[in-house]
Amino acid sequence: MQVTNTNPSPSATFPYASVTLVIDESSYYVFGASVDVPISPNGNQLWGTLASSRHTPNVIDSNNFDVVFANASSFTTTKILLNSYKQGTGINNPDHQISIPNGAYTFNAGHSYNILVNPANGASEINQVN
Image 1 (cartoon, one colour):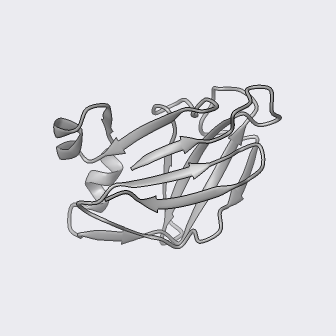
Image 2: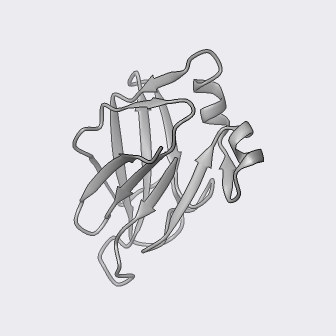
Image 3: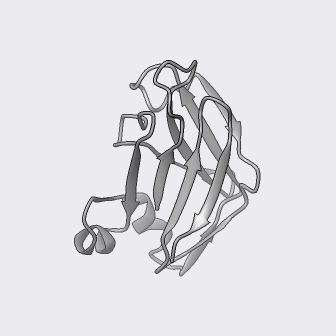
């Protein structure tokens, strides 16, 4: 899964972004530029399972994906949150948070997805890449 911050302006009110995948209203998985850092304007980060991180350049292993795909070939989010930040630190403390439209989305093993978000205006899009 790639998360892309489409905001072109570092001077926007909320230039930095991450997304939170919410599964069954009880499990929350936050994806930014790293474990503790949101994504910079015009930036992106690739996240995947341990297997995909070993076979695909620039993919960070997410033990969250390892857990959700351990006994299933797909998972469905109940919602996806766009987390917006004024600064590029503190991923667990967003300055603003909204649910993106079409946030109930099914992710299937063996496919790649791109979640595009703009923290400055709240725009979002989810694409299956393959």
